[in-house]
Each structure stands twice: as C-alpha cells, then as structure tokens.
Length: 395
Image 1: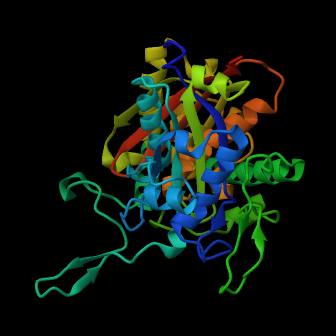
Image 2 (image 1 turned 60 degrees about the vertical axis):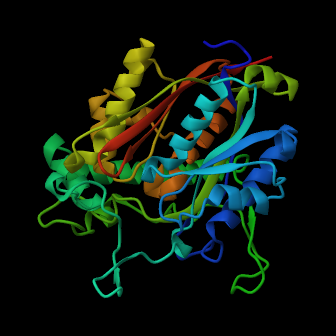
C-alpha cells in the first residue's frame, strides 16, 4: 500500500436510476443526468466544492464537448474546478475512476469526483462528410481497422459463444438469474441507498415527475419466454434479445481521495484501490477483454479470482459474461449478486462506474469488516479494464 497521503480510497458512490433508452430519462441530456450526482456526493461527504481537484467522467456516445466540465458547472461547482472527459467506450466510467485513482496516487492529497454518464436517448446523430460535404450517417464508430474484422457487438458475442462453447441454454439461464436477482434486490430495498432520484424538468410529457427506480428488470420473464426469442444477430445462433443487455440512460459517480483526506472528512470506511489493469484482446472476441485484464491484475496482486469476495462484471451479453467467468474459474452464482446489465441495462460510458457503486453498496450492507472486491468490464475494439479494491475501515 501507498502512504496515507497517497493511497486512493473511494468513500462515497451514487448512481441515477438506469432506464431504457427512449424511456423515463429520455428528456435529460448527459450533463443533466450527472450534475445531481455530483452535488449529492459533495453533500454526503462534506467535501467543499472548491476543494475538488478535478472531475473525471467517462462518456462514449456524447457530443465530445467535455461533459465533465459542463456537468460540474451545472452542479454549481466553482469555475476554478476543472473537468476532463474520458472515452474508452464501454469501459469509460471505470477507466475514469482508474485515472482519478492514479491522480490521487501521484500526490497532492487531492479529492476527485469520477464516474461516467450516458444519455443514449439524446446522443447526437453521427455522420462523416461525403465528397461534396453531404452527411453520411453511421450507427457506430469504427473501433479497429477493417483487417481486424471490427465486428458489431452482437456478432462478437456470437463469436465468443461459438469459440468458448457457451450454449443457448446457459445464456438464457444466466439472463433469467440476472432479472430475478435484480427484482429481489429492488424488493429488499438494496438499491435505494445508492440511487439519486431524478426530477424531470418542465416542458416534457412527464414534467414534474421523479424517477427513483430502475425500469429494466422484468418480473414476468420465464425460461419459456426466453426460449421463444429468435437469434438476433446470426442464424443459426444463440445470442438473442433475451440474453443480451438493452441500451439504458444513466450516470454513476464516486468521491475518491487519499486515506488521510478521507479521515479529515470524517469518513469511516471505503474501497481502497489496490490495483488496476487494462488489456487488449482479439477484436473478433472482444467480449473476453475483461477476463484478460482481471487475470493479469490478480496475478500481479498474488491472488486468484476465488480469493475475491465481491465481483461486479458488466453483462453486455450472457455469452461473453459466462466465457469470462469460465476463463477466470469463477462461479456465476458468486458474481453480480443483485443482477447486472442484462436486467438493469447498459448505459455505455456509465456502466463501469455503476459496477463500483454497486460494490461499495454491497460491501457496506454485510457484516464482514474486510472484503476484496473486483470490478471488470469488456470494451469495444477488443479491450478490458479491471480494478481491485479492498473494503474496510479507514479510521
């Protein structure tokens, strides 16, 4: 571990509800999703707005206008506070937290706000300029040279399923488990402490309403219903709309600082950042990037995946999730204990930060005083990021 004036620790984490793209949060732009979280985190921790060293935010499909700076000013932070926006596609939110942790470790005893946001509903249309300057619209960015294949996400999920022998039955069963776990967690009130309710502004169809819960988990989903979904990306195939995530709007953010500064703020516990890693893999099998990053990180820390108490992994597709868990020899029953993106949705640039928010909430609600926690996410273009934490007292 680093000295107390350089050891990074996450002392607070909040997220918005995660809602289907085009749904309850569709009237809010990215900075409007994020700003309430930043203000709430300052209030929760007692951190003065002018004491924030920087705001580091991940975003994948926004307007590339530095949403971090826009959101922090929207939240009422002073103009002296800078902001930087990170784009590593689906990994952006986790990579923003990783970057902030390294900034803390570099010295200065600073405090940072870090996380991710995505408003897929309001994301700008994207187009290249044609020969005559006319717009040529495209649905997604190019992630790697064409010679590497650059498959769409669904086709890459099919590639992983075929390469690693992940059956349709396993995928459907895992998806159903994710929905049931999320429903059980919501019923038990597990999400309430981490969710920042969002007020919908005037001038919209739902003006004046408050959104305070995720809308993705499906109570009527059954194995029989899942079995009726046809292949979505390749025929014959095993990846369906039922065992794939859906696009969501949402944001998540944390306060990360040194142990010394955390004590000054009166924090009693937190997630100490033990190590992070990002790895590259074959873009045709991009879904296994998280496993490569996690395996390398765990080896560097001298532990195995089985030594970790809490694991949160973004479930973009059941096929790639199961493949990664198999590669790490992790029991699927021990991962995403309150459900994952298959039930809650994938808010691209926010999803990695949602994982960390979930880990802190889970760690705080169980009586064990110290726990190892792992967040990992696979990334478009054939990459993955993983971060290892130790939860415990910092008093």
